[in-house]
Image 1 (cartoon, rainbow, N blue to C red):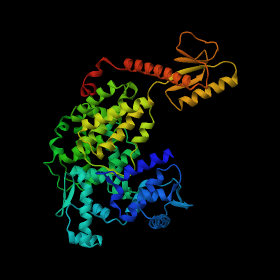
Image 2: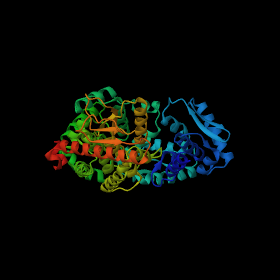
Image 3: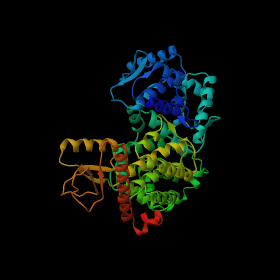
Image 4: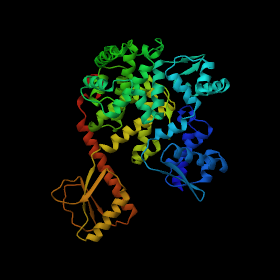
Length: 519
């Protein structure tokens, strides 16, 4: 079946991803296989045959069945409502839809030595092999093997654990732990991480900064970042790293100065040492994740800098490609700000699921897919990174572009003047709708002389109610040729309508610099 071939390719591509760190890389052999089995089942449309799963996992039938039994036992033991059901050599998934994916990840990482090392290093700047092996209750040989494995995974982030020290930019370490915890912390784990922070006081301060309260989800992400920063505040910052050298543009940014004052006010309560690194790293975090309101992001980017420059170039490209219009411009600027901030300041990605790009491309018409691929490739080149990290960011920007294309184009209003024979009119309408599919580009409705339309569709010899609108006279609703020609007719009118809308919405200053426009 075609869906199975596409599905197997999707999962296979995820399993073969090269340099990106996959969350199951922190698990032992059995837990990794069980996790990949869960990923496979969650992305399947129906039950999967054991022989297909054996081929995909490179496991024997005996081993696969053992892993399935052990996983079911583990979930029951931990009270997680997730079970794998085996029936006639086919496997399916059953769960209650009331737990988080992170609950599964945390369960499978519970005994991982690699993950225990990372959680230890989260709050210990230095380590000793002998002491750490005692702490984790493993041999020194096992610990050294795990450290070598971790260094392979950390290399994409430009980080390493060597000679008892954490090597690499402190900003990168904080980013790494943020991404790690986003994939691995349960609800209880997040509460334990942030319980030392004064959440209500922070919420008040950030509300003063941006003029409105953050959503509960955004506030939680901010608290996680601040908890990570506070736990590692005494660590060596690496003042010669590229982050501080490339951050001079922040000092002239009014939003940054206000943020710095806010952070100083907060940290004084805890008698914690404050330096420019803390404010700059928080500034980067707020721009690299969807936390700030659109108005605050736009205001901050309006003071210029490398991110604003990249956005200006990208906006010019998107306008030339007719992907951005007035209704979606602010959302696009916001998304581009996050995209370029992440690409400019951070490296590395942690993957826990297959990417969504293939599915996202299916949400737009074929005529737009090639254009989107060209745009995405250009933006990746503009970032200067062609890695799995850039691929992950590309999926985010692809979703943004699909949103812009599909959500905010003005639909074509089509009046159906198909005659008085209700049966014949209904069959003709059904044939038209079936051929066009569930496209939101076209709004088909029975003709009413009191309503406004962009065009009309009439049938055979039915009287045309208006002569001042474009129309298509369908001769046979069963004709593939005519239905295809009708679709082309509607697409052309849709394109004309939205091209006019774009031209009307763009101001004469559209080609001026982004920074100049947004100050």
